[in-house]
Structures are given as structure tokens and as C-alpha cells.
Image (cartoon, rainbow, N blue to C red; front, top):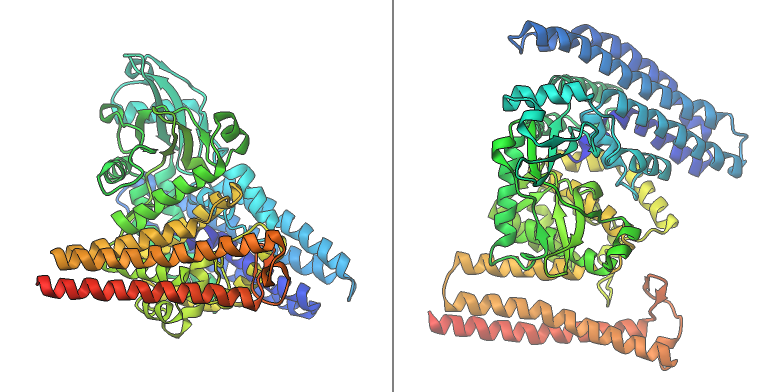
Length: 609
């Protein structure tokens, strides 16, 4: 569902991409093509409206549902098309009105268009609800891909401030699903929700034993509207392919059809939550006491009503709230990174919607920072074969191992496009991915505006190639890309206080070693796995020592480190070639010594065998 969140703006994105390139190149003529495209969209929409209701009429036995779908499909599709055409025309007319060569006016016009278009998209999401709310939520996390106006507008309105269902509708769903009205099932039940998201809203209640509860109730009519959305999106994807052949997102329909019914069944969410609780409480987990999954009350739960313990906490990105709790952003960032790295690389069972509203933090029983995981509706379980390749790929990315990146990216159907595939995973350009960085910071993102503009430019230029890669990559990777976007957004909101890639490198290496031991149990396998883990630890330790030494030299104004020669820039620090050579030698020495230890372990393994 990663790219699903962008679907309703595909048409606008295509026009915006042309506008963006025109703004950079000062070639207004390229925008003139938007008008014929908009005309094609309008013509195509008339055809789609005519067949929309019929498409679903043959798929349902319910006359009432058919009637509702016959209304919803053309209505929602009309909103989509009108919004898209409006955005296209706005970019075209506003930018063409700017005098040639007036860069300041062009800049102002472009940003004004971005804001107007973001407001239109926000209204579309609220009007359609359901899947479109999820679209808006994800747009609010794409800091490095979309213009700031889109990101800020969606982030301010979409996480937990969505439109709410009326109390009579909520009470009716509870009565239908649980057999009795809320006033009978609960001692107290607040009629005003404390939060509302894309699929449900949350009410505070009190059990008859006095326990404080959070009751999640699905929005009324959501199942019918989501069924209409699947059909609408399928039509839109086909329309996009006709108008803009470079955009081929047909695979998205399959992803929606697979994931949406699961998210709409809260029994499925309970099963995900229980697996997550077991995984993170197991001896394999290093975060067992630092992560909490709220307990569920099965007797007060159904497919559309989920009752769980109420948790007091603050969102992970609430910096003032963290300060009140005395929780350092660095400690929290480390905990979030450890938790999700374990989910992906150790357990192979991943919470794929970790945006800020789904991650709370509180003080645990022992006073330690404790991460609380909410909303377990969207998960992806990955098999050991994929997990091995994905872990090996990330280890190669972190250590700038070009051969390893190529090998493991090709195993995921990247082919010759492995540099672009690596850039999609890391949100960094290829030359930076493979450039040596003594502090392992080459994959880190910043909030620098120039960097964001650069990445947005790349996304526009390589849109077709990105679409082609998404078509052929393994299906589990789609939700992992979305997960990565969410986690990057959280990390940036915390100020990126630590190098989370160090945690990723260690977790990947551990996962690979454990899988080797499982595949070939015995003393020899254990020795080989331990040697492999020590190799990575040694290399990282050598890099850290050399980094500290260079920092000391610079602080004291000694040697080449005090200069600002040419070389690799890292967060405002410039290393000259002499310093880089010291780091290269330290890393190479670590690799040699670790390889010797690995060889010794393999020899011991052969002897033991």
C-alpha cells in the first residue's frame, strides 16, 4: 500500500512534475501540454462513470449494497477527477502567467500553487474518507519527496484529527456487533471521541470493574465506501496509464484488495497484536521491557469494535511532551530503531503503519522510557529467504559495499537498475551511498531544505523508472518501503539525534548469523556466526576510534584534520583526503583481522565436523 497513498494525486503529480521541471529550466512551454491531458481525463471520466456502477452490480448479491455502490463509485470518482483537473489547470495558468525570466515571481507562484493544491487534496481526502485519509497520512510523512506545502498541510490535519462518525452511528455499530448497547456493556462510555483516524475513531470507556478502556469503533459505512474506493482506484489507475503511459500502477490494485479487507477486520488486528507481543517479549528480543502492546478485551471486541486497555502517553514526536516526561529524544530514537529493526530482521513480522499517532511513549514500571505500539491492522510477515536477502542488502548499503548492493538488489529483481533501487531504499543518491564515510553517516537524512529539494527533483526525474521497479520488486518490499517512510519521518521529527544505521548494521548482522546457525546447527556453525558478528563489530569499532581521533585532532588544531581541504562533507564537517585515508586504512585493517578470525572459526568448524 506504500504508493496507494499517492494515487489520487497521480494526475496532479504528473502535471506538477512538469511544472517543477519548467520552473527549474524556465521553460513555460512544457506546461501547455497539461490542457490536452486534462481534456483526455475528462473524456475518460465520462466513460468510467458509465461503467462504474455496472462493475460492482455483478459482484454483490445485496440490492441495497448495489444501490449504495452505484451512487458511491461515480460520486467519488467525480471528486477525484474534478480535483485532479483543477490542480492541473491551476499549475498551468498560474505558472504561465509569470513573466519569462522572473525567478522570484516564479518561485512565489509555484509555492502558492502548492498550497492551493494541498488544500484541495485535503478537502478531497476528508470528503471521500477511508482510503483517502490514509493517503493524506502518508503524504504527511514524505518530507523528502513532496513539496513542503503538501507535507505540512496533511501532517497538521490527518494523523488523529479526521472527520468523526456521529454518536448514534457509533452506538448502533456497538449494538449490532456486541449484542447490547454501550450503556449496558460499559460502566461509562464517553460519546465524544478522543481521536479519529482513517478507519475508526477511539472513545474512552470504563469497564464494570473500574478499568479504563479505549474503544476503537469502525466508521459507519466504511466497508461499502472502501469497496467503492477499490473500484474507483482501479479505474483511475487505468485512466492514468492511458493519459500518462509512464505511470503504470496496476499492481497497486492487487495490494489494496489484499490488505484492505484485513485492515477492516479488527479480529485480524488482534491476531497481529498478539504475535507482536509474543515476539517482543521473547528471549530473542532486546526490547522486551521497553515496548508495550495494549491488552485486548476479547469479550468486548468484534470485527468492527476493538476494546483495549487505555494507555496514558505522548506521541513520539511530541518534543515538549517528551521533555515533561524527562525522556531524551536520542534514547527514544534508539528504542524505536531497535524495535523496528528487530521486527524486520529478527522476527520477520512487521508493523507497517508506524506513523507518530500510532507510537506513544511513557515511563515504564521501572521508570524506563517505554514505547507503546498502537493500531496493528497493517502487518507484513516475511519469509526467511526474503529476510536474509534484505538484511544482507542493508548491511551492504551501510558499509558502501558496491558488489554486495548489486548482488542482493538483483535478487529482488532490480536488475541493472540496482543504483536506483538502492536510492529508493535509502533516499540517498547513488554516489553518496557508495562513498566512504568514516562515521557511517552517508545514509543519514537531514532537514536541510537544499537536500529536500534535491531529492524531490530526483523523484520527478526518475518517476518512470521508479514505477517500473515497483512493478517487479517482491510484494513484501512495498509495505517495507512505506514503513521506512514512516520511521524516517519520526526520526527527523525527533531531530535525528543518533545514527540509527549503526543499530541497523548490528541487527542485520545478528539476523544473518542466527539464520546461518539455524540452517546448519552445531559448534562449527556457531563459531562461524560469532566470527561474522565480531567482524562487523570490529570494523565499526575501528571506525569509531578513528573518528574520535580525528575529532580530537581537529579540536586541538593538529594535523590535516584541522584543515578544510577537499573531500567528503558530513553534516557540515569536511574531511580532507589525508583523514579519509586514515579511516580507510583502519577499516581495511579491521576487515583483514576479522577475516582472519572468520577463517580460524571456519577451520575450527571443519575440525569439529
